[in-house]
Every structure is written in C-alpha cells, then in structure tokens.
Length: 78
Image 1 (tube, rainbow, N blue to C red):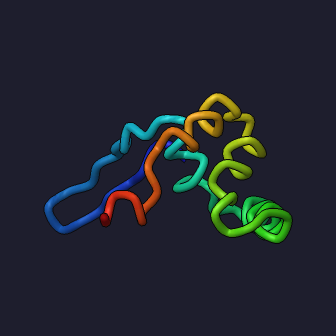
Image 2: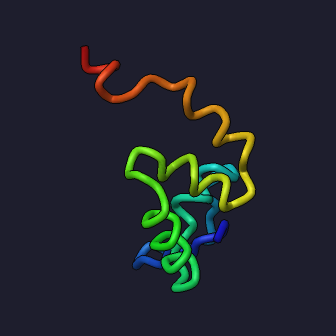
C-alpha cells in the first residue's frame, strides 16, 4: 500500500509516505495472507533471524544480505 487518504474538518488529502521496498516489506505487510506468512517465517527461524528471513521471503535478498553488516543493539549500547 503506497497511497493513504487523510480526512479531517480542515480537508481531505491523498498522500504517499515515500517508503522504499524494505520499509514496505515490514510496514506494508497487513493483509491476512501477509500475517500468515509472517507467522510461518517467524516459526521457522530464531527471533534474531526474522528480519533477514522475512526480507528473503519478500524477494529482497539484497537487503537481507546487508543485515549482518549492521551492529546489534548490544553493540550500540556499549
């Protein structure tokens, strides 16, 4: 989903969040089918492997390949 409709007393507007494919893989996964796929992927990998597995499931292997190069939360807190 790329376009959103906002309605208020001041007016209405269609807007685009400008999300790229990686953000959409996570934020745009809202259908019942997506939720079933999320459950299947999450049950097949350990919690710390979900993001990489989900990106691969969505056909974004190039993004999944980048995950190991990012520091973990523990590394950034030190």
